[in-house]
Image 1 (cartoon, one colour):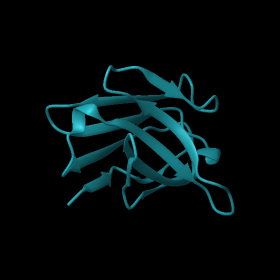
Image 2 (cartoon, helix red, strand yellow; image 1 turned 135 degrees about the vertical axis):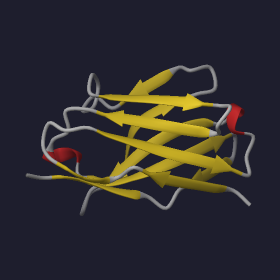
Image 3 (cartoon, one colour; image 1 turned 30 degrees about the vertical axis):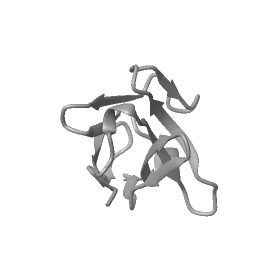
Length: 115
């Protein structure tokens, strides 16, 4: 059974930081492309950042320079370090694992940026 379990969300003030984690099980983690997506109320889910097995990364323009995605294949975990957060970053953040036709999602973790 495939499981992606996110953690690390919460309430943070503008300008603050959070680190999200996604622990994967039931997949050969190292061969999967891992991504973080987010969905704000009344908006479509959007890609925030992704990282493939070769450590190549991709970021949404809105988070470049503020967010960093990384992975630890030994721990089957992908991370999203989020710095200088602002209100527009408020959303549910989802972890995604993708390899060929296989596509898995976590349950999501809420990130709220508010003073």
